[in-house]
Image (cartoon, rainbow, N blue to C red; front, side, top):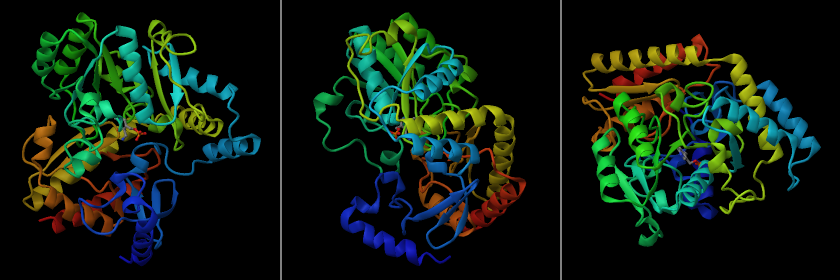
Amino acid sequence: MNNTKSKELYKAGQKHLVGAVNSPVRAFNSVGGNPLFMGKAHRSKIYDVDGNEYIDLVLSYGPMIIGHGNDKVIEAVQKQVCTGFTFGASTENEIKLAEIVCNAFPGMDKVRFVNSGTEAILSAIRLARAYTGKNHIVKFAGCYHGHSDALLVAAGSGLATLSIPGSAGVPKEAVQNTLIAEYNNIDSVKKHIAECDDIAAVFIEPIAGNMGVVLPSDSFIKELRKITSAAGILLVVDEVMTGFRSKFGGAQELLGIEADITCLGKVVGGGFPVGAYGAREEIMQMVSPLGAMYQAGTLSGNPVAMAAGISTLEELKAQNPYDKFNAQAEIIEKALLAAATENGIELTVNRFGSMINPFFSAKKITNFTEAQECDTARFTKFFWGLIENGVYIPPSQFEAWFLCSVLSDEDMNKIINAINAAMKLAK
Ligand code: PMP
């Protein structure tokens, strides 16, 4: 594989960019080697600057659910670009996207658009504190909720990939009200509730995707809903990754729970920077200008991003790819397990809808501790094997693979062949 130009850009990029990236998950630190610089993408494929073609299972870490360059999305974005980029005033499309989102989430009467998942979450922290008058928050080890101070402890995603326990620059005062619980361990939450009567909210990824894909057990997630309601604690469901991915709407409906506050991002902006938080009427009444909880944004509800979000969600609804996602993910799971067995490699596969993740471990993976015990050296060999064979996955054992709705049978064959070849190299 020729990656001369990526290498040159990596060198050049290090001069004025930090590690030549604008988000650490894009660095290849944990897998060694040179980060790929991408040049263009079309439908299910992405092309690096050296012209190598890959089936894209990163999809910009989730947003590109209907594939790259959908005609209707391009048309909507082009039309908006010609009409105006941003006005600093309300536009009709914000109402339209709000209607689509609120109709898709049973517990959401009102929504506020922001510019990223991080912003949605940090606003939800403030809102939960404003509504309950309490200060503590609970998060689960291995869940990632963006990079705001209060939640940057025991976090997944890039921190898990780079084995960073927290972040420098976060004052201890900023995390002293953050309590850590263990995913799939309801007693770890009950203990906090018993010991602290100042808990405003519990934050959870309904399907964890930032320690690799980890599913909640049915009893854990339902019990979590029950005990938080009973204690007057808000349940903030972080659907930044899962929103519109496992069904049109949120994973919470499939899991049989309803959030007090839901956070969104990624798919909702169709590849443009959009985040959102929403809740039932009485909670959203707290938000400025209706209430005393302040949160604002120069580019929030940006017209181009709203146009991309609306057209992406309309297209997604029309395509209804969710059965196809399950079927294709099942095929990939089977291929992964068969290739692992053939090469005497211990492997566990976790998946939910269009999110899938092989863990190089013989054990079931149900929490962060188990995820961290995986054989990351083997993952690295497997990763490069896939890259060499034209399949682009995140450069980390701890990030989910995503499927898009335009994956063809030919793409699927290519993925399966690449898995077979890469697993041999991972032996
Ligand atoms: N929450 C979850 C569950 C996420 O996966 C992410 C990003 N991967 C975030 C929050 C933060 O979103 P953003 O990167 O848009 O700030």
